[in-house]
Image (cartoon, rainbow, N blue to C red; front, side, top):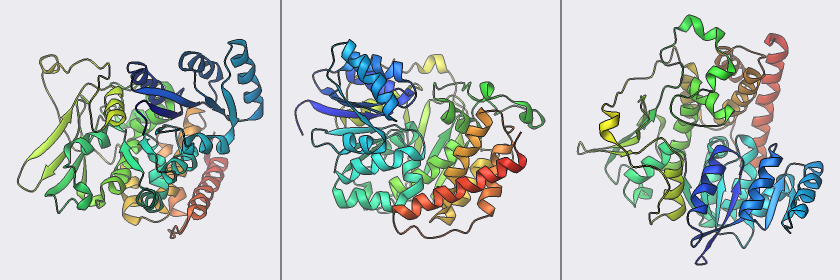
Length: 396
């Protein structure tokens, strides 16, 4: 690895991508942007290219490539523009790249993230869906390639920081009893159940603590995000679903905890700012300034905890069931959720119908083994087809 690490940021125009670029810009002596990708926010991607001057940019199609190329040339930049999934995989696995921030939301991030893993890169994993969909295959690819996999979700990064360095030997062998995965409870933690049918996408996206994209904000409101994180934790830390307990912690100051057999519980605390886990993973095993303000415990004054209500948050129950079933169930869960959240954001279904739609879709398909990546994508496609059929029958 070179003295200055060259970074590919997949999903550069999203909240994680922008936070990553903010941290990188604070340390020009340590990091250099190699490639950026964007999907629909082309004007923002052009601005990021002007500021960070990557060698390569990736866009979804030829029309976007023509527009971006014209804009880059007008700015005097010679950034190469690549297109589509093939372009994403190229910049994830490029020999010049030292580390890849995998921050493309949803199933679309699976192939380029796996390309980075198979190329043996340092992979900063913010795309939890990649691991949810293909857990066993993904982790086997990590072991086969020698890639370094570092979690970016604030909860998984907190767990990573609280575990001993040799946790890969098995959590029982290093004295860990369970993992406590914290959740804020989102904007509807106290909303009367009868009112949930009338909540709007704007209300669901108004997270009380975090600034996130629309899809992940809705997932946070429904606690599907926490369910996906439960599945991700099982693969990252080689634990069973029953060893992961979700704890609602409204202040989002404790990002997760690890419970040891001797009675010790280690927690990682910090302000709710994604630059902290990003900086931790970028510099690991060292530490660098992230730009995040120091935690003021006196201003916070109190820390609250409560058990999650699975009547209020049925998506959490569905995710735990998928984690216990394993095989194709998590991929099917994720696909149905992506369709359901998109439909809610488009006002085609009501908020409570997100969980109802997912449960109906899961009940319509058998759980099957995932022998290869093709089987993963088949499970994903099958679930999306059933979800679209549900929408035709029940959507507005």
